[in-house]
Image (cartoon, rainbow, N blue to C red; front, side, top):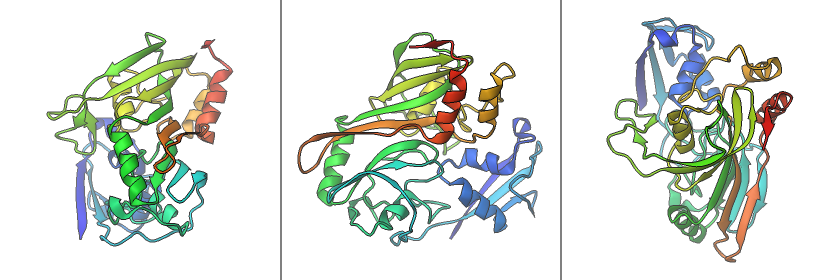
Length: 321
């Protein structure tokens, strides 16, 4: 059965590409999947099929028909992964951008689960047929370190560690503007927006505690590089918290969409023009191995798009902390 989504473009959406408009509203559907839906004629603007680059106008009526995935196990796929660690209990990978963690509405292939199953190794079935081995998530366009469980024992151990805050998670983010202090804590409860159900908000009727600690690593003209540590692990937590304090993540199409400022140095502006995702990277993940009891910590450097932007900004750095 298909799920039908309908939208009306408003003035702020004028001249926005249709594929970018849809990506912002469906952060868990990959850009390649949205492109496929467009090519299959499942996206209509004013009842007509259009191309991905179609520019919207105020008042346009957009409909998108998304096939629901079945409840069967995802298909194994031969998708290359950067594996940081792998044994009989856990597997740690460096997740790339534009990859959803598991199948869901609008995507049955191309996910991390499909790739893990393609390794022909066991995954804990406890997470359900569409999420074998998955104990935590990264947003589709957030890169970095993620652990999955190969056995039920490991699944329950890791889920408990995340729940009880016994893991260590550090992120890197490029954000707009300069923070008022070199380090601090953002303690603002968040929850699912009552109107826009795909979004998380600080003004939701039902909210949960959310705490993010930050440290400024470098400041550049108009942009800062932060290290962030999660005390809680809510959906979109870092992105929502930074947007709430008026320093949204660079490239965030949902919580911090901004035009490139004319004052941004040309080298950085040129790099940023080619970036269509949030500059957020899960740099470090630490946890206790479910079988050995050993504390393990894994790190991954920022991916090429983020690293390239940092390099371009470093040529104009105003301070290096």
